[in-house]
Structures are given as structure tokens and as C-alpha cells.
Length: 362
Image: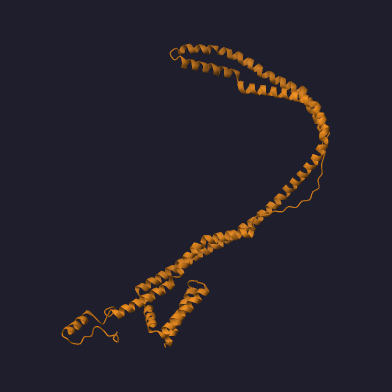
């Protein structure tokens, strides 16, 4: 019925779609769906419904009222927060990608270095294993011959070993337990005097007699030195005249069985991992996206402020129309208080009145 209303509705829907697409950066499909729905609603409504045209024409001037200015300022504030916030999240995502790429490169380099470092160790391990196998074969053949020699000398070696250990232990125990004989003797004398003073506190002068026996410590020092020195002389004598000849003889026997072994080997090395490097990088990116998901959701809420503002303006326009039609004094500069008083006087006099207004007058 109204081509102008149809054109105006389509124009408003198109302007809103362009603003949502270019300013707020919504998805193209979201902008297309919203534009089509608004275009169909506003275009058809303004073309065939007078109430729809009235609501839309009443809602447009509300952009210049106090509430409209507040909505525009809120929308600008949301855009101000949404832009830097989205930029920060984008930078964090790019930084995570860079770190993931760097970590993947570092892992590649590390695996390569580890593989190169393992090759000599694996070679050495294989070589030692082969040498051990060959030495075991040779040792099995020589063991029978050496066993016959070792059996004949086992009894003599065991006796010499027991004597050697006894002398060593005697010297060590002597040096560790007795220490300085003179110092130990003096310490015992002092401890005896202290115990005497604690036992006889009233006759502590008698305890000083113990100190006169410190002369005995000198004699003990001489005897302890002689006692600790004798095992050392015996040990040196046994090492020089008994142990050294036997050791030389065993060394000559051992030199008879020394031999060289040459080994030629081939090997293959395979390294396995529970996850590939690409999967590790993908897991890192998924973790970063999971951490940033709440912030993306929070910024998406600001992007829907415009559609809420449209609903608010429509509600405000419908409320304004309802109050304007039901209340004759609402936003009416023509019907003043003086006009109402004059109309009441005419009603009291029984004359025709103007108020209330008829539907046509409204």
C-alpha cells in the first residue's frame, strides 16, 4: 500500500547490515540473515501496516533524545572495548602459534641432536657386547687351565690374606682407638678428678691426689707407640718379602693370556615417540584456544548490543504511542492547564465541551 514505507524499511535494514558487517566485524552469514529478516519485517510492515510505520517513525527521533544518546555512547563504548580486546586476543593467538612453531623447530633440532649423540653410544654398546661375548668364549677355555693353577696356590694365598688382614686391622684399630696415648691418659685422669669432686664436694681437695699419677701417662705413651709400631714393621716385611714375589708371579701368569680382539659390526637404530611433533603443536594450540574461549565469548556479547538497542527503541516507541493515545495531557503542548479549566467551566454551565477528544481528533 505504501511504496515509500517499503523502500524506507529495506533501506534501514540494509544500513544496519552494513554497519554490523563493517563496523562490528560479524560473520557474513549472520549479517545476511539479520538483514533479510529485518528487511522483510520492516519493509512489509511499513508497506502494509500503519501501526508499524508509526512505531518506526517514532523510534527514529529517539536517537536524538537522552536515552538515544546514552545508547549511542554505550554502543561506542562497546566498540571501543571490542576492538582492542579482539586485537589482544588475536596477538595472543599469533604469539601462541609462533611459540608452537618455535617449540616444534626446537623439538626437531633436539631429536636430531639426540639421534646423532646416540649413534656413538650405540656403536660403543654393541662393540662392548661383542667383545664381552668373545671374551667369554676365550675365558671359558682358559678357565680350566687357570683353575688348576689357582687351586694349588689357594691355600697359601688364603693364609697370607688372613695374616695381612689381621695385621691391617690391628694397626687401624690401634691408631683409631688409642689415638695419642699421652692425650688419652691425661683425659682419663681429668675425668677421674671430676667424678671425685662430684662424689665428694666437701673434700674436693683430696681429689687433686689423682693428678699426681699423670707421670704414668708418659710410660703409657712409650708403650703404646711401640705396640702400634710393631704391626707396621711386620706388615712392611710381609709386603716386601712375601706379597711382592707372589704378585709378580701372578702378573707373569696373567700376561701369558693377554690378547687383542678385533670386531666388525653393522647396526640399525630406530627411535619411536608416543606423539608426533605435529600432534604436540596441535595440542598446544588447542590448549591456548581453550584458555582464550571465555574471552571470545565475553567480546561476542558486546557485539549484540546493537540488536538490543533496536528492540529497546521499538519498545520505547510503542510505549510512547500508547501513552499518547490514552493520556490527553501526555506530551501535548496545546492542551494546557488554562485550557482544561475553561473546558471544566463550560461543562459546569452545561455548554458543549472539547475534552475528552474523540478518536478522530486524536
